[in-house]
Image 1: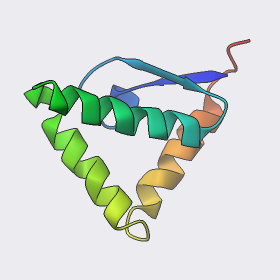
Image 2 (image 1 turned 180 degrees about the vertical axis):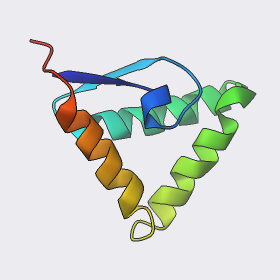
Image 3 (image 1 turned 45 degrees about the horizontal axis):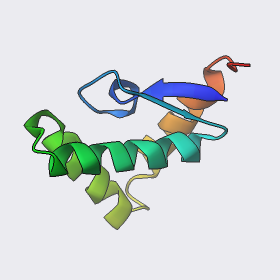
Length: 79
């Protein structure tokens, strides 16, 4: 298990996302951003829009995705 924060994935806060894979933490970040915006947290609005854009244009977003996967791979395992 590894942990990345909202900020490490392009968001505005230090909320932790833990998962076995980079995809796990990316999906957790997507849920976190969606829930924060739904709850009225405007600080997450831009990151949420950016995330929605990546899901809509996956080919264009490959650079961000590769960077996130590299960052995840470089983290020490937590157990």
